[in-house]
Structure formats: structure tokens, C-alpha cells
Image (cartoon, rainbow, N blue to C red; front, side, top):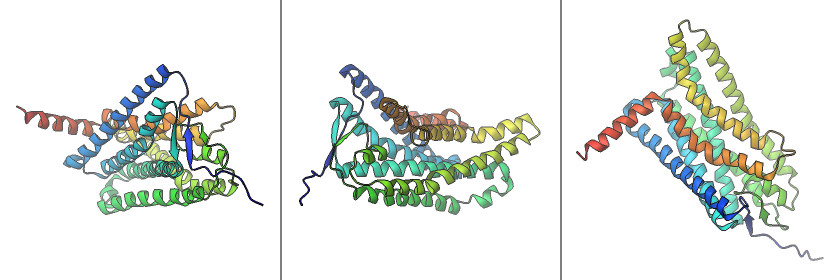
Length: 312
């Protein structure tokens, strides 16, 4: 008996439905944020690579975090801007899979980099005398390469599972990018295995890094509180405060979208939370590291003065 199911080859992303005025306003806001994200993260990468004082493990990891933020926002925002202007837009099946793959890679990479950075801060504050022997350049490079390889491998494993799913019903995705949960909702295949695979892979990608970060900061806080002088306590806390803020924003936004219960949550609220997670977090990260970091501000001032002195 022949099956007359029509195989879907492209999806229609609804994005943010609303009046043209609202969509244009959102388009302008997101365009400004996107430009700010690219410029801010490129500035940090440039400063870290060209300033000798910033050639340390912490800033090396920060520069890779900026690369991750550029990858994430470039993967999501340009197509979202197109969708806003056209009140929706189509994306091919392979385009959707590729977008989701690099989205997953960028988010997993950021999670792992934040974990490595928390370990770096733990060593710097809790065992400062051994810092240079533990956080060698060779070890830093190995940790970074491992973060990249683990991110590409983990996401590839369940992306292959998505490729074998059948999509034969509606092709409308009520979202502004190809996220996993909306894709599973419109699939006409049994998605139990891929959901199980997703939960299993979240252990090394999310939960183990979360435990490492929490453990690192419990030890960091204990070490800071044991410092007798208030000046020393303030100096120790200032070295990890920027990272702690970035970690808090990243995990709050991620857990609000994927971990906390979604019952009773509207689709609009889910999209707004995803917007915070995919667009605003990469924009805020370089601002936090710039405004709360004296070394970054000094490096920027030197580059600024050097650049404009050439025109005098």
C-alpha cells in the first residue's frame, strides 16, 4: 500500500508576529545590538591578541568566549532580521539543520569555556603560588581545544539523529530560529530516542560543567572570606566578579528556556526568553568584561591613544 505523505524540504519560521511598526522597531533594535555585539567582541579579541599585558590564561579564555558569542549571534540574528522585515521567512531543511548545529556548538562551547574559566579563577585565588605551574600555556591551549572538540562532537551526534527524522505534516515553526524542541514538535517520527539522547548528552555538556562551576565558586568564596584584610578580600573578589556575572546571566537565561517547567508559558514568552539567551547575552558579555576590568580599559585607552596619535 503506497503512502501519500508529502516530505517537507523547507520550513516557515514565523518569528515575531505583530504590526509592521512593531516589527520594524524590533528590527532596528536587534540590528543595533547585533552590530554592538560584533564590534564589542572583535574589540576584545583584538585587544587580547595585540596587548602583551593581556597575554594571560584568563584573557585567552575570554577571547575564545568572544569568538563563541560572535558565532552564536551571527548564526541567529541575520536570518531573524530577514524574518522580521518579511513577517516570516522560509529556510531549507539543511539550512535549518546547519543553523541548529552551529547554535548548539556555540552554546555548548560557551558553557565549557565558562567552566574552564571558573577553574582558572579557582586556581588563581585558592592556590595562587601554584598558578603559573598549573595554568601553563600548553594546558590552556589543550583545555581550549578540548572545549571546541567536545562541542562539535556532542552536537554532531544528535544532529545526525535529527537528519533521519521525518517531517511530513506542517512545516510552520513558531519561532525565530530552528530550535530543537519546535523541530521535534512538528516531526511525524517517534522522537523518544532523540529526546533520550539529548538528556544523556546534557550531562557532560551542561550538568557536569554546572557542578564544576558551583564547586569552584564555593571554594573561591570560602577562600575570599578567609582573607584577613578587607583590601585583599576586595582585590580577590574583583578578579572573578566579571566572570561570576557572566556565568549567572548565561545560566539563568539557559535554564529559563530549557530546564525550568514550561507549562503555562506562552509562545511569545518563550521567544522573548530565547531572545535574551541568543541575542542579549552575547551583547552584554563584552560590556561586562570591559566596564568591570581595569586591564581591558587600560589596553583600550592605549590603543585609542596610539590610533589617534597617528593622525596628528
